[in-house]
Image (cartoon, rainbow over all chains, first blue to last red; front, side, top):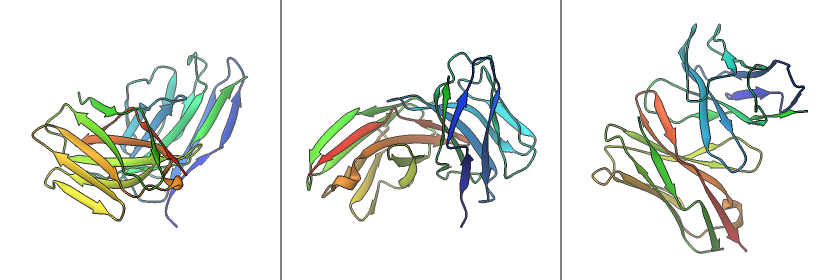
Length: 112
Length: 110
């Protein structure tokens, strides 16, 4: 079945560590996105990529980095510069044009 | 840029009643309006969408209406069931930009 897979489901980070969240899709979608969701809050855009080897900052990119070396993969690194990284992270993809997103099941990141 | 406002933030209904969630958007060039349902601990799922050339769309118990002149769109759920309890997000999209509302937590009481 086609879909979008995020791993791990739960991740714990120590202060000062970088961590990488994985996002893989086999839907042949061109565009991929990373969102952050805080408890009781909406979705805030971190980074997005419309084609391989190209990506753009979203509204809250500071302290995060991404890469898009393959169409299927869009990993997100939460760096030590992100001062408040505890949140639920959602990856999404969609084909080019006016279509809805397919979301992954999310990664819950906690700083310990 | 686009700004999407969603109301109410919480909504509680009795099983069998209808639920309505409303959204407004600011950019008249937005042309695609999806609705997502998010259950606890999961990613949002697309439940229905509407494009700017259509005024209403139905899928079983859910329907969406769009008023382009007033720049607002609404989600209607009829005959609500406990499994409809979730957070619902509206969104407005233009080109590759999609903006989400803040979400509505719907509780359906048995």
